[in-house]
Length: 518
Image (tube, rainbow, N blue to C red):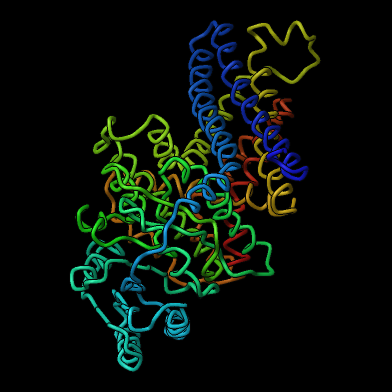
């Protein structure tokens, strides 16, 4: 009897081919870098070749391990089914604290989503709801307080935002007794009432610290909103499943359950902007178990404006950059396997790879274009001579650029049946590259993250002045690339000029998206 059916065999074959493409890209980049160093004979070319090598090695590392995540995720169903077969029902249904943290949120949405949590399929006498409110808007705080008083919900308000969301959660935990904490964000609407009855039995494993479920935005008809949803979909459908089988699944801040006694032993949530990642790492370090269940139990509010996306990505990359330093400072090699180390490194570097490295590759591309000879007919033999190294770089760089475009398009076509969404993801990554890069440097310099979370606080569609004002750096980068591209073209380097002009368009998409989506 075969383990895979015909459909699974086909999916597995597609996955192997995709993995092979990523590995070939990585090896080709590193191999070409070695060739550049070998044939370089001037200081400028040595510098260029070394920079290209560094970026190729970084890119190769992420391509190889991205393909490893992608491959490992295929076997997660088997891992989860085996785990289910060993799970035993809890002898006694425990009390559960359902916590919703807030900060100046829409009152009507909060009321609707919180009331829905009373519909959880669980004995009401064992279910206790808590609102952790950090709102500075007096009217909103007052409205939420009255709502809680009318619905038997415990309302806890802080006058400061020390520790951000982590601080709010730690403040609540100090005064409650329930062993299990179910956390939901204010914008998440429960769509599967069996959240607790499905997940709590897994806690028969006394070492299990937390369970994370799949997070998803509510379905939307717009291409922009759907494409942003795929950012999370890639993480939860591939990365989380791969990490889950290695006990390094990340608690994603909501739609999950935490064992309070473990949290207390760890000293509460580490008070950083992405407290969930830090908590996950600390639990892993102390040899506790984690679990990822790829089922959607609640749907979040879709991101409908570019402003919201900028604020979200700023926070993510600021936090990821903080985490890298935290990881290297606190890691204990004997507590984790080499694979676990790689899981955390790739998580911390993830957005930096597709932002900081992207910006650096753009700068190296400028150097490449202006190292090239005029674009004239040459023989195959001449391509491999030192004086034509700039042309080599342009050709290889152009191919790499095309492959980086095709990768998200192919994957979204295979798994989400959409070429348009793959193209949108590619464009969004470029439009967010500078925002993410600035967030990384802000974290390194210890700047206050909240200064950027509110940039800007309102969303205004179809206001060109608003769009220009809030994407000044992206626009400046685009204009500089246009000038350089036109200059390269005037020097008869048509290929180099087109390359830089294409980059200019991609960076200036930030202004276009801010104008169109607010």
